[in-house]
Picture 1 (cartoon, rainbow, N blue to C red):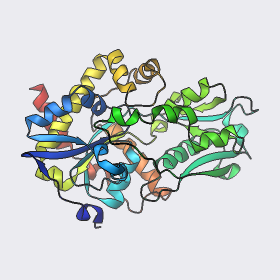
Picture 2: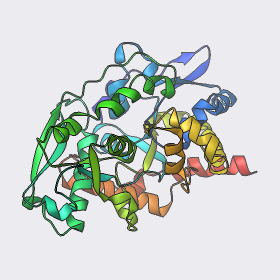
Picture 3: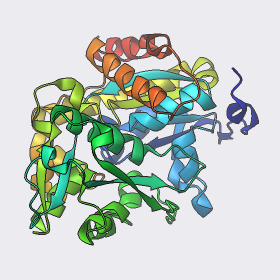
Picture 4: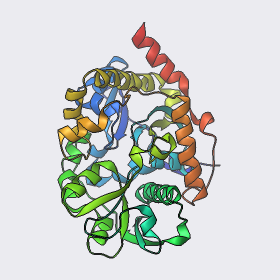
Length: 360
């Protein structure tokens, strides 16, 4: 398989003798977001003669699509697993350098005043499923929601054919002003996203559909509005495989760049490990920082959401199995063109070197 997007991309440049490294981080619970806010990413990069440049600082919204396609050769992407998996399968050669298992399975919402009390009551009813009209990137919102909906149906003894899935189309063409770091970017949109909830929320509100899937950060704000209620909360299920929802959070880097600059990969992981250990020991302070880069409605809600989670990045067997589950779902439901071996994708030596250098 050839990876044309990598071959066509420009070669990384140097800034004043420093190796330029683009990085991009989703609005998720991971250590890298905190490492950026505390200045530790810059600190670790300086030690190896590198300069961290936030992808979304590029002008004219040029960083948006590469955030999903991993199409720039000097890019580290840390965030939701679906785009990272699809980039590895179909677009470019990358190495998986770390995982963080902090995502949860999500919820099924209905209108608060409806006569629907459990997922089994959805038999013969309409479930809204987000559909992006932007073909330049994978529809990770749909992939996450489809998996959650099918899980909820199966737990209630329903098959997909026993409900009506209604595609809720969305242009999915967001525009942002350049930002120097993630917290500056998400400050532009977090309030709007929580206020309107997206196209599928509006479809539920108007009665076009009877239920939708929602992720935890959005769910709390929607329930507190008084308009909606939860009839299934996958995050409360004991089966850990039900928590695989656009996760585990995935850090990856282009293969060629990692081979040319392994010290950069180790520096990135050192910053993330330091931040992960700090989060685990300082939950309240960490919640205040993570609130700036995620979409839970309040700091207190963020603190509740991160309680008990391990933020130190790893490549544990459980997290690798989670990526396998996510990848297989995407493959089996038409989101991927090609398959690949997750364990061959993983490059644990970078993480081992980062951990060793911090612990010595």
